[in-house]
Every structure is written in C-alpha cells, then in structure tokens.
Length: 198
Ligand SMILES: [Zn+2]
Ligand SMILES: [Zn+2]
Image 1 (tube, rainbow, N blue to C red):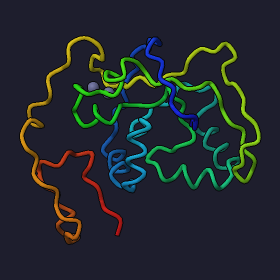
Image 2: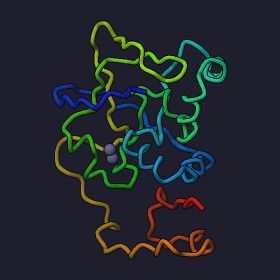
Image 3: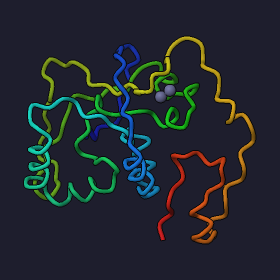
Image 4: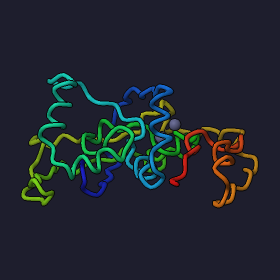
C-alpha cells in the first residue's frame, strides 16, 4: 500500500482494467467492515481491489504475510475487507461514487485523470518505524488508480441515475433498536447497509 499522499497528474492516460465482481459472501465482508474503515476503503478504492498476476502463488503470498509480516501490519490489514498493505495503486478498484451508481461524478471523471503514485515505497522496521525509502520502478513508469467502473470518464456527463433524483428518505435515528437496524429502509443504497458497532 502506497502511503504517500496522492499526486494527481491529469496528463497521464490509463487503460481500463477489469472490474472485480464481488460474490455475495464478499459483499457480506464489506458490510461487516466498521464504518470508519469502510469510509477509508471507499476513499482508497480498496472495497473491490483486484490483485495483479503474481510470480508466486497466492498460497505462498499468504505464507509470507503470515510468517513474515509483523503484528502491527496485521492489525491494520484485518480491519479492511480485503486487506490494506497489499494493494498497489493499479490494483485498486471502483471509486466510491461509481459504487453508489453515480457514474456522473466518477472521481476520475471529475479529476480528468487517474490518481498516480509517487513511485516511492517505505521500508519499515519490525516495530513499524520507517527506516528507508526506495523507488520501486527505476524507469519511473507511473502506477495509477483509474476507477475500474466501465463508465466513460471523458466526454458528455452520463445522466444521473433516475432513482437518485428523488428526495431520499431521512436517515433513521442513531438510537434505533437492533431490530430496526437489521431492516434498513428500502431506499438505502445497498453498499451502506451497515451493521453499526454495538
Ligand atoms: Zn462509473
Ligand atoms: Zn468511478
């Protein structure tokens, strides 16, 4: 995971990448994510990330994470539905607006280009301190996040989804009962049908 602040360079063009289809079980994982972390995942584009092909099998990758990663990395990793540290910019998924059927305000349509990383990674000590930085791509080729939603990010603005042009129902009060929480109002977008922390 690139920790550097985003550096947007609209001049960079990006190719469309396939979007990840989450299974019902994976959506359940997303729904069970704590609200704060879900917001973070939405902003970072890691609600539906897609791993690049890797020279090592997933089982070996899992072994490395299990045996080599220090506990402080796991602490953050398990707060997100599909992990945190493992994702590069080009593995990120759909932007939060497109996930909410608002392709007319796709983040990268609005920005006029993808998010570009700074081509820097950090080397941490076992206790999480940064001890060095390195440049992962000496040729400087950009690693970019370009929202994977298939919507067009250039040209005329796509029409807003019709159902969102109506006034939404007011949110239920925070003090609602557990029973009420389990049956959200039908107008509530699916992604945000969350279990609130007890
Ligand atoms: Zn879209
Ligand atoms: Zn988008």
